[in-house]
Length: 429
Image 1: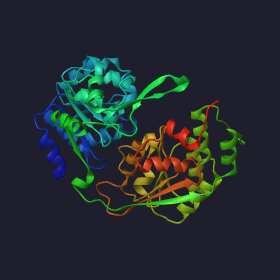
Image 2: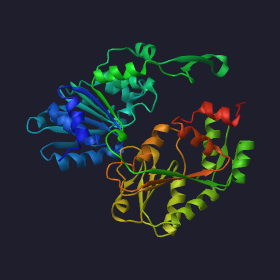
Image 3: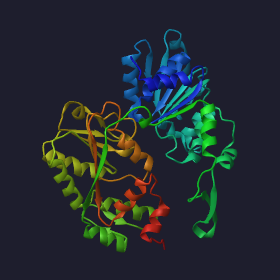
Image 4: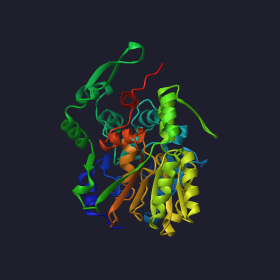
């Protein structure tokens, strides 16, 4: 295995450190950097926590490049912590488990003197989440490797938990006092609510980066080490439907197989998003026209299960091989083998970590509300190994919530409930 110069540099900069973070842009090969650092640290027991969709990829990575390492997929394993230690007497062991399941495996708290690897460490941003508390408070690692292309999604307030694992000696309150500006607004019922200042959210940002670097964090963007092909974004606008207009006005709509009731801010916003996408015959027609115009390998991002079923039906009508990355299914066989395949990716399952650079065309059938997912999804095709211009087709229902969401994503902002109420002049009764 030959590392790229920027990967060698990462290991050189963190040599002899036992707590490190490689905040490298998506596509720069954090998997290889992390595994090589794990080998350098040299613990016989290693616990790797990642997204469920990445477990098989990590398992294959170690089996391919480190055949002497014993890999355990711990999702269904009945092996005890004591057995893991016994195995480690004969071979280096890597135990792999997903975030959602790890906190339920109390026996992992009995492991000591091991290296903890967190792939997509942004998954522990919320300090009150069970998976975060388990990792921060209950595990007893003696070394730690954090890997993420978007460690906080541009929100520095979400870095505190990762800073704790690196050994930054600040309480959450001290962290916020040093780096975050807050404002007080009136919440529901007129009660004061503290939120991050919208105009001037952060302070001492260079000092924050200095603190993190001093504790083993390395930052790198793609443009610092290589030139990737051009990215082109093409907006395709679809007419608004009468169903969308009716629901927007009345907040109630009955279709043949679905009833929409916008009684809360969330249900109203969700209904508008669905009616602008999967329940829009006009957008589905635009999708049909788009895929019929090319026989190239395509990646399609979507949000909801009903969208997937409608999109698959259109693809099947055109005899296109199909792959799916969703919460229920990971099947990339058509993507790997068929040059005219269409791969449907649900954001939560496919936006992070996948290598899809065999394709250079991506369709956004519907958009996510989280900027991090949008930025990550773009990198699935725009990464090391891509030699062709990457083209992104963004389907939007005109004069709808689609355009409001895309406007926020272009600014690298989440589309929040606050923005929704402001832009649509929505008022809850």
